[in-house]
Image (cartoon, rainbow, N blue to C red; front, side, top):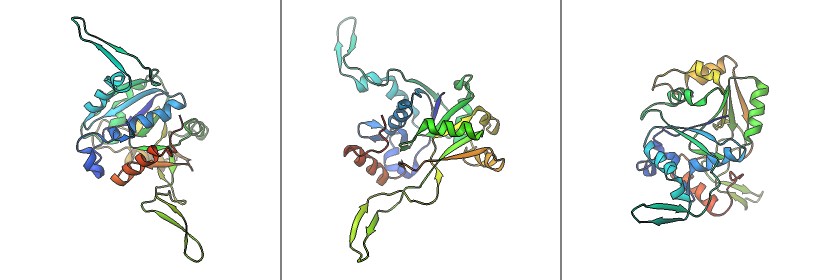
Length: 260
């Protein structure tokens, strides 16, 4: 089962960082957020990826093209027959990564439509965005999707709080402080979708088509979309504050999405 990751958006709400690199390449620690997302899937055995490239996609290509250089200690032999010897190993040696150009300005629906050829004969594929991490139970979402018998199952998550939450006692003294909580009520689309190949019947080769608009709305209206509720951690990287938060959690060894 292939994992399709949308990596082509311009990330305009994080312009101070995305002016120079695509949003999926923004780092958490010393690795791009895209790598963290891929590690989550690979942890559960899903290691065949199709990356939908667009804005500054050449930087994502360069990262994976030079993955050994980026992750291993190296000795260079600078003779007439130059050679590079990589000393260390990495845990991503069984990954298969397809880098697919899906248009500089294409919307999400068109990007998914363009990669159909790379899914082969698979009747089911996994789909998510390149800017959100969580401790998702991928196998459980797949089982839920199959039991529901729908065309698309999205992962429903609680939206992250935009402000810190104070835990107050009756005398209004503070008993706890949650720097960036998730709200306890309501759900939004957190990505990490499970899709039938029948989804392509709702898509078209039109750069203006957004997956989240007409295609998913039509599926919902026809009763062909389900939601798998995720009560654990989920956090997008939409703002500089969220970028800072994710890096702080990682640096302090408190990253809930690190399931590998």
